[in-house]
Image (cartoon, rainbow, N blue to C red; front, side):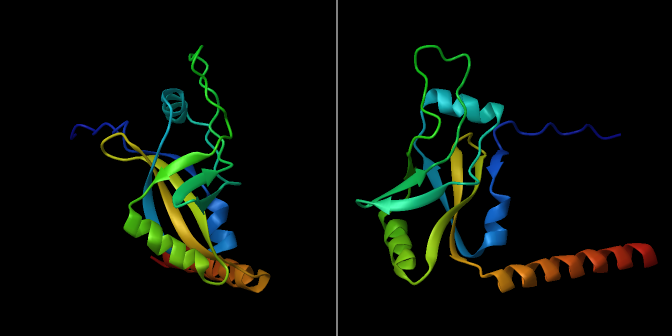
Length: 159
């Protein structure tokens, strides 16, 4: 047997917003860095992060992540962080201007899709430029998913 590779502790998903792809039609994605405190990073490595109700906003030429929940880190005694504070996102000026133009269009919004650690161990946020879906669009998406599921079952049973 070949030796099993260990999972890289730096490269892992911390939080994922699964409802985002159901409620929004994601047209484009952007990877952003995050300005975090030390206790926030340690807490993210432990888990329990929630971005389901959060959103990103451009204010005064800066990109912010609003209403994300990173639980307190128990071992940090004196330097604790607020659980639901606004966190600054790091993006280049070119990317910011692109985002500003996209959000300026009718119905477009910035939705956080996933928080993860990259290969270097840096916390990153995958941000989606999305448009809200109507109820009939959500039903069509469910229909497609059900059909794909049935197809895979049929192929598995036949083959």
